[in-house]
Length: 502
Image (cartoon, rainbow, N blue to C red; front, side, top):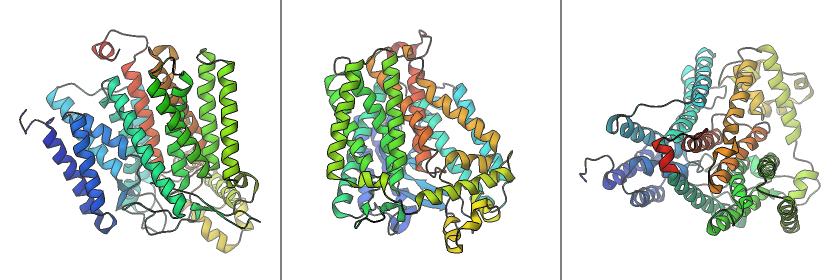
């Protein structure tokens, strides 16, 4: 194979090194030599594993680095009124490389035209809506358009991943990489818990700064609870990642070692256990509720299709109760998080919701504009605004409403909110009908991914989702599920892709 061949492993490794070096060069002092070595070794190792395919190389690298919130501000939110701007993350950098590699291979080498599904069209319409809103919003146009571009990269991840995965074996390898990434996250969290320090990675947004959300203060209790963040900038972001990984793992566990390889079952059990324990110590109430909803959705689907029975449900409930009791005995802060005062967190969310509803009432059809929520919050106040002190008002104005549905309605309008809810439901229901999946492993993974997206429906209502890493991971999960749908068409058709994936 000639070195000029795009699939040559040496060329791929050099491109990986070049991408890492370029990121470091733009990051300045925020990233160090160990990160460069990490990127280089990851590139070389994955190139050897995938035998020189740039597409597979960048796919595995994307799923590996996506949950590591390392970024460099390209268009930072420096305006008086906050807007997300654009932080070039390691995941986005790999995504752009994957897009180029996949596009060149598909369009120039194999000369196969790009495809577009119905879901792709809906996603593109939503992105176009965001761009139009950002273009018409008052304020710093560069910052607003950069915010729109940041969200566009999330949807690009959905489209590229869903079409770049060409065989079911690639999905299995991606799952192996996800497990490796989880182990690194758990190791980081363990170090944080032992040292009671956030140990921020070079290039993370939390490096060198303190975040009040990383400590839970309980009224009347002598000690506050430390909340680990992993490789993210907030415990809730870590909790969101754990729900996306843990729910598909539970689906594989419920499928049972009789239907899937025993080794896979044991790995899935370990992954679910690690996700559950780590999720508990994040003290993220929204994460707990979302995890419970996603697990319930998976269990209901399996029950309806007679994949599990009453014995399985009873055994799972008993095992969960014993494990939960052990965790509560060792870490009572979990109970305190539910029963003790929450340092005005609920009060702040109530005021933010009231503020968002006031903005929606003022701009019900078009919203205040994408990225212009904070500007509108300075001008429009709810009924509860006059009931809080000026100092508290100043703190509230630094925040964005902790409810993504209200944020969408406030920025884009009620019609956009309805469209987003429909799009989110379409993304989650890709796993149905369950009869389309022709083997137990794929069935469990697809239903688990669907359950993970259902969990996001609840998590979105309890936290500040903007154009950030959590939205990126949501769309990435939806893209993986659509890739499975493409590999398992329904009704079954005798296409070359379907035959090779069977």
